[in-house]
Figure 1 (cartoon, rainbow, N blue to C red):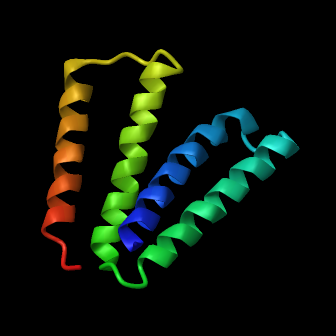
Figure 2: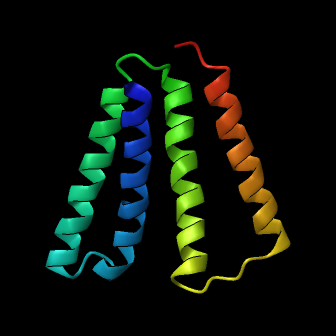
Length: 106
């Protein structure tokens, strides 16, 4: 169950990362509140998952999901360029996430 919570924490982190830009440097109140709420939710979910999962593994997977999601949404939504280097980086991150998961003690 904590792996699912960790996955959800990663998804909320992706939403949080995407919510930062609309705050315009935290000068817009409503987008800032949304961003802060997503940040708190992501960290709270991560803390719940860390109750039984190893800290290093949980944090690495949390940030990895966030990084992959942020890059993917940047490409899909914001038309960021998708270069061979970025594809390679994404593949390495995903490979690392899978390796961390399959070799982590339950």
